[in-house]
Length: 440
Image 1: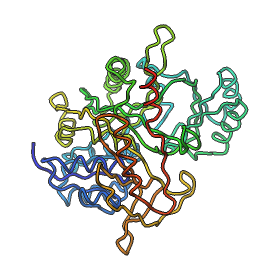
Image 2: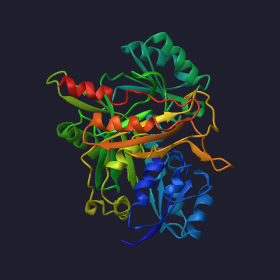
Image 3: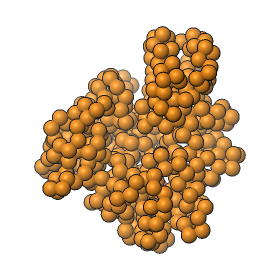
Image 4: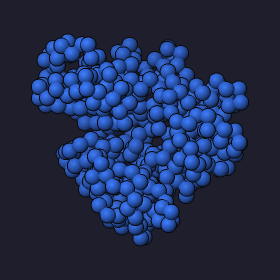
């Protein structure tokens, strides 16, 4: 293993959590983050590059002797950045953590992902896909389902392309808006309608070299803006890891029924896949024995956000070493050591998010660092050198402790020391899991 320069693409809380972990490695000489945010510069050097500027990224990687490219967000993966590096003679020696364009289709198209699951007998909800010319058939399919109704834009819609509706007429109206009025732009040119699964959601994370794999800590995130899981969907308002109901028995079902057939399915299709797979799961109660069975809601081809902010702090082993093993196809020789403590992450957002929100408010963080980690998501440095808000999700805090109540308590103590005009956060992160623990 050699000491190397690393380039990490992205600008969110996920990338700050990754940068924090990468920068701790003895194998990391210089870490560059493109474009980064107001906090990532504490882990390395921010570089003013767009994640879609493949040529610019390539030039920078060559001129700064980068040996490892770690891709944070989905858009450059779906756009084919791994293939771009692999296809150029001057770049192909640079290891890329992220799947090929074919592999990224698992996230790039909901229809593709559902067909892949069906082909590989991976448990998921019953579904059909429709385009604009098939509206009448789509209405008939909706009529054949029980309420609530799940509509998913086929393409990338920044985590906001999924609608769950109780009333069939509302579902038909929204379906029409998606297919005929391009409610989510090109992303909803096709819409997947699927049967609603009743259960509790969580996320599983896998790192694979395309042959072997390791399972990273699981997490549960909180998507809605309002407490009690009410209001609009967001990119995520917090997360916790581990998840109390995901015991060894449940995670073994995830491994054998979902992870193994997913990796085998990719190999069967001859898809080059070196990187992370995020598996959004619904834990559904088995009608026969009452145990929980995992069903796949969706795949993502990168780490989750804000799950990363509770997953990476629990990884004790050297992340760079693990990623190098993945790139070399020797992941079975890598070591993964997990912190047994619980991580709780609380996201603080700008006033008005997830709809239109303000930017440029000065952030004050007096003594906030004691007790945990602060990951920036949508921050920037102003001309005057002040840290200011620059996104909807502004920053999150992560605390580790021996139990979920202790970790949450620590996290909220830190939240209360950070302020800006109009700051908002949910106060009920993890409470559903605490209730489950009490019910046991």
